[in-house]
Every structure is written in structure tokens, then in C-alpha cells.
Image (cartoon, rainbow, N blue to C red; front, top):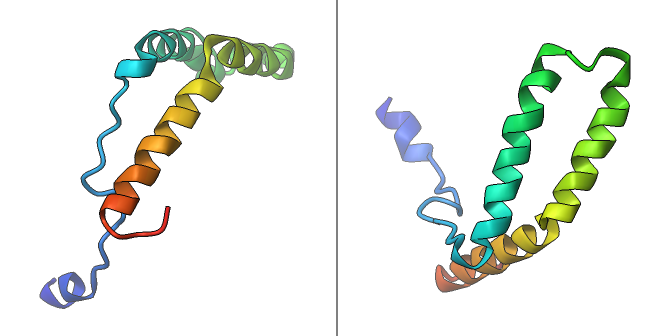
Length: 88
């Protein structure tokens, strides 16, 4: 075990915490969509309509502000990496 720990490499994301303050409303809607659709996808409840439901789910995510959340996440993570002296 000690020899494995000696060979461990730090993971750049360790210690990063996303601050969702500026996208709180978008995150809430996205989580709601996940709660709505995930069980049916996981159980195969959509059957032959799965592709159409996936397209619908993805479209609703876009409408809910997924791109805005992703942009904010990337910005914060890039700043975090820069602060640690790593390339974002």
C-alpha cells in the first residue's frame, strides 16, 4: 500500500469546488430535468421512443441554460488551475 501511495499523482481537480451562485437558477432547473428523465432512461421505460425522449431531454437542457452553466464551470476551473500553477 505504501508503495502505491508513493506512486500516486495528484489529480488537478482535487480541492476544486464549483460556486454555482451565478447560475443557481439554471442548476436548479437542470437538476429537476435530471430527476424527471433519469429514472425512465435507467429503467428503459421509454422503449421505442428512447431516442426521441433523449433528444427532448437534451433540448430542454439547452433551453434551461446548460451552456451557461458549463461556461461558468470552465471559467472557475480554469482560474483554479491557473491559481495552482497548472495550465487550464
